[in-house]
Each structure stands twice: as C-alpha cells, then as structure tokens.
Amino acid sequence: MIIDARLVEPESVIRTQVCIVGGGAAGITLARSLAAIGIDLCLLESGDRAVSWQAQDLYRARNVGTPYYALDMCQLRCLGGSTNAWGGWCRPLEPAELEPRPWAGLDGWPIPYRALARYYPRAAAVCQFDPLDYDPARWLPALARPGIEPLALDPDTFRTTMYAFSPPTRFGRVYEEELGRARTLRCLLNANAVRIATGADGGTASHVEVATFAGNRFRVAAEFIVLASGGVENARLLLNSDDVVAGGLGNQHDLVGRHFMEHPHTRRRMARLGSVKGLELYDGLRVLRALALGGDGAQQGGALARIALAEAAQRREGLLGYSANINTILLAHDTAGWDALRTLVLSLSDPKRQTDPFLRFPPFRRKGITAHDLWMAVRHGPELAAAAISELLPLDRLQVGFELESKSEQAPNPASRITLTDERDAFGMRRVQLDWRLLPIDRQTVLRAEELLGAELRRLGIGALAPLPAEEAERWPDNLVGGWHQLGTTRMAADPRRGVVNADCRVHGVRNLYAVGGSVFPTVGVAPPTLTIVALALRLAEHLADRLEARVAPVTVARERAAAAREIVAPAPAADIAASPPAPWIR
Image (cartoon, rainbow, N blue to C red; front, side):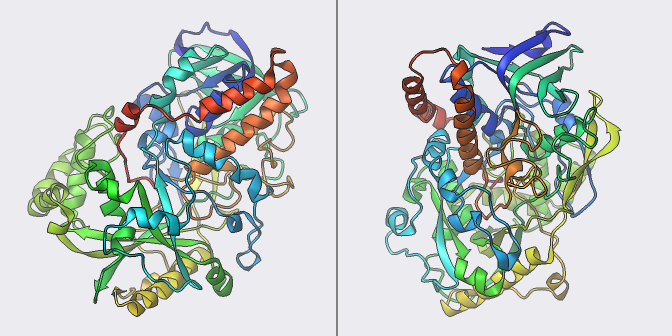
C-alpha cells in the first residue's frame, strides 16, 4: 500500500524485514523485487508524487569546487526520483571498465563483470526497452537510412558504440500501481529519513528515524536497511548518523562522501570541410528530437551511436574512457537569445508537466519569472525569436553547423568530495557542501581524444575542429557541465580502507546496512549510470532474498522467486510508454 507519512502516529514504530530509503530507480526496483517474493518491507520516499519546493529545499547545498549545478535543481525529491527528468540513455558498462587500469591508476570493481552482466537483460526490461546486444554490426543496418553508413573509423583508435533509449521510464508513474497493490509493501510518501540508529558498538543498524513536514516523527525498525537515495543523500545520511560512530556510519577511514564523480561534458565547434555522410548516426540532437516527435524516429530504432576511444588507444595513450557525439547546431542556439528563451520556458512551465514543445527543458526548474528574465528576453528579442523558430522547424532548414560534444570519464579523486556544513535543514540535518574536483588525467583525456578525433575526421574528409584557445589547454572550458550523475561517494571495495561498501553493497563495519545506486560505483566508465543502477538493485535484491529466505513464509520459495523474476521485468503497457516522452537534457 501507499501511505502518506504525515498521517502516521507520532512516536510510533513500524516493524519490517527490510527498510529502503529512497524511491528512485534503485529503491523502486529493489522494493518490487523483494515484495514479489513475499518479503515484508517499507519503502521511504522523502517527496510526494509530484515535486514540491518545500521538499526540494532539503537538497539545497553549497558548491565550493569546480562549478556545478545547484544540488536542489539537479535532483528530484519525489516518487521516482530523478527518473522524472531522465533522458532515457541506456548502455551497460563494459568488461574493461570494471577491471583495473594501471595506466590510469584505477583499481577497478571488486566484482567480476559476469556478476553484473547477467542482470543487464532484466534491467533493460525494467527500463522498458528490448535487452538487445550493443554490437553496432547488428544495430546499424536497422538504424540507418538508405545511403547512410557508419564512419570508417580506425579501429585501433576509435569505434562506434550504440546507446539504446528507455521511453524513458518514469519509475514513480509506471510502477506506482504495482507498489500500491503489493501485499507485503508499505510505501510511505513524505517520509524523510533523518538518522540511521545503531546499537552501542555501531555494528548493527536498529532503525531509521523518520520526520515529516507535518511535525510527526516515528521509527522504522528493520532487520536490514538499504540506502537508495542517490550519490549525495546516501553519503549525507551516513555522515549525519554520527551519534554513536564519530564521523558517521561507514566512515571509519574517512571515505564517506569522497570520490565524487561525474561525466564531464564539453562542447567544441567544428569547421565543415567536406562530406558529412554518416554523421546522422552520431547526431544526438537529431535522434532525440526524432524520438520525441515520433515520425522518422522509427528509422533510428530508439538508438544512437557515439564515437568512443578504443581500449587499445586508452592503454597506448594512458587515458580514461571517452565518447562523443557530433551534433547539429541550430540557428541562434549558441546565443544569449537561446538562453533567455530557455529560462522563460523553464520559469513558466507547470512542474507537473512531463512534456514540453521545447524538448530539452526539464519539467522542473524554479518558481517563476523574474524582472531580469524579462529584461534578457527583450534585450535579445531577435535571437530569442530565431531560437524559438528553430525549435519548431525541421532541423535541416535552420542548421548552421556542427559541434563535437565530448562526454568523458572522470577518475576517482579522494579530494572531490561531499562534506557537511554547520547549516541545518528543516529537520535539523546538516546540509551538504560539494567540492567537485577534477584531476589532470580527466582534462588530458578530453584534450588528447579530441586531438586524435580531429585527425580522424580530417582523414575521413568530414571536417576539422575549431582551434582550441590557448588557455583551454590548461583548464576546462567555460561550457563544462555534468550529466546530473552524482557517483562514487560510498564506493564499493573489498578493503574497508579503500571503500565504504563491500562487493555485496553492505556498509563496511555494519552487518545489516546497505547502500545501492550510483554512490557505490568505484569507477564510472562513459555509459550513463541508470541501467547499471537498476542492475545493481536487482543483484542486491537476490542477496537480501538469500539472507532472508529462511524467514519468508515456507511456501515454494523457488517457484515464487521464478514467478517474481518474470513479473518484475515485464514492461509496462504501450500506453504508459507513450505517455512518457524523452527528456534528453539528462544523459
């Protein structure tokens, strides 16, 4: 059932086998999996069914490092979490991305690739797309229009990689009915976890303290507690739970909150020299608009190609992972008028809407329009009008060029971290300070990969990259952004001196406390994280089911588990998919 936590009796205790904190992709996947085999559990979601500013304010934080999004704008605190603003990009991590890479100083994951790979087909079904393989030779014939071929890239340096698209799945909307009818599940909305309580030695978690904006507080006591609140909040809750263990739970080696990682995104103009044959396969703007509008989106088959740095080149050059799209630039989209138009639409859009004629606008931004917004719209009126027209006309009508969009891997860096400040939120929890820091190898990967790719594009007669300003050889360009991927802050490692959770996602030093989601990634590769987050949640569900199997009602457990596996991977009806158009601003 789904319950409004504001109606729970103050000081009451809810007892359950598993308590899951967070109702996003990881938490909902885990809850569905465990409920399907009869395990009693409680799912705590801090928000409601829709975004509210009161709940979003709990994310408000201080950024002191490399410029980053405001944390109360790049996470959504409602049922379904940030899948409500997900672009649907899906690709598994690759075997090499889980292995040690000594040339880049990376330890790798403490689990073999096969331990994760076997969950990817089920994760694809949970994300509502066919779990096909990602071999371009099998995808491209179905994707390309007649006469369009993939680029003949030098395989020792670059290769074509494929990305599939979820509709995208809005986990709260698509799976809410199932959560509501699950007989062993209580899903509490507006339930804010404020502390993980433990015994006197800190080795066993006893309960989660919960607070609501209605003023009532209560406890959820569980045999197992799982944090599934994202890369920021998982770390924040552990750090705030420091009344027994100094520094916070799992933080005996000062690792909670460290190794914050993103996928750096940068853009660089291209100078068109010759043929652009084949670029359509790699044009993110073209594919995403086709998918959102329908029509010739069918030709793309719900997939997009990227140019990726080959593993051999990474070894040879001492680099991290790198991938790129070559995107169309539309008239006025690189002007202040475009920014003014985007701000107006974000300010005036209904936060509850999931669709927008301006395809790259998230459904939630801020409270309303300001005088400065109006002034910028008037000041850049002609550019704003041109940008609006370019959004409505076919791409080829107003195409003014191409740009290379680089999306690279970040190396884990202990100095890139989340800490707590003295400022408190509405429930007395200390707020976050984010210090996002990048290492020299992060910038060197992009610089060298772009240099190699520029040479490759010249060889193919396609074009050349615009010259790089001298100062950008030493620093990141001003257009550096991330993908709303907060990763690595409770990283997985076999050795507690190198990570926060073990290979089963259990917090080191606490026998019944787990964390799941992007926070446990030891390295991030170049693929968007959602598919892997879902796969990790499915894997954790099996682990917890094994630990709890003796306590489940003694019916045919194996038969129920098999039936549950079939149920939880069944895609939602087509009507649900059609109701959730892509939102490609999030990779």
